[in-house]
Image (cartoon, rainbow, N blue to C red):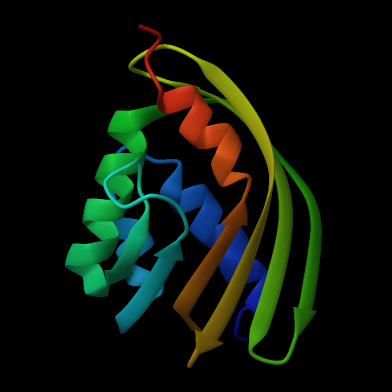
Length: 134
């Protein structure tokens, strides 16, 4: 029996919380694409392709901020798409400011693996948290 697409995404979130990305990468297609909005160079903003791109995205995310709480609020699954609504509270490591945002992750799956992640969140809240006070 194969996992449902929702189960695959739940496994992905669990894998992404681990210190290494080996398990995460096993859940992704070779040509995976992560799209994170925001100002280029700020946090994990950018379009990340393939295993190397996802690793760089996750490195920037992990080095740039520390999640204080992640609450999964809703899963909606239809065909090859899964939409997840979350709420996150996090602290930007430098300069140490906190922010929170509702987040929507729009996943496209292919052959039982994640082929694309579109990330939607309050980019203004994140940008404000990254700004150092003068």
